[in-house]
Image (cartoon, one colour):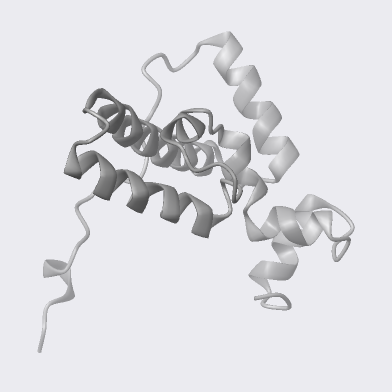
Length: 137
């Protein structure tokens, strides 16, 4: 019998804010949670964490020389990944565009948002219910 507890994922998926009761951040988070129909703030923090890791990678690559093979290889891989996710357009093939990405760009690509924008659901919350109940996959 195999113990499943040994196969845990120890990587971080989100990062809590440093100041728990910062008024401006709380208001901005609540607005995004309502606009995109997120279940909890942790879903927003997950997107912010993913974005921060992508931007840190781009920032680090931008410090290297343009002819550096690591910058060329990893930079093109990062840009291809952003194109595949639908975050960057075809003409946006520079690392500066990666630094300009926002949380809203990520939240626009969620299935829940796309279902609501295409008119398949009456509200953003209804879109979440349809996905959860497997009417839309």
